[in-house]
Image (cartoon, rainbow, N blue to C red; front, top):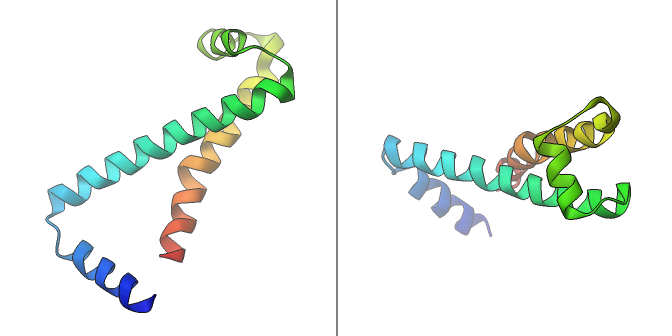
Length: 91
């Protein structure tokens, strides 16, 4: 396993800065999409809303549904900032 991670790190170091930037943007978009999907999947049974109601709440929030918006924000923040940093520590 150590040989695999060493070769991965070495190949990443040898990439050009523009390719590294593109990979970073793709990873951010991937984790943002993952966070949104995870929030939708968990919020449907947790708040007993349909998928259409959740999409309406997210696109047009009001004061009655602030707890759902907070839930989405917390889960997306975790998946966007915490998961990638833990992944970098593991690899």
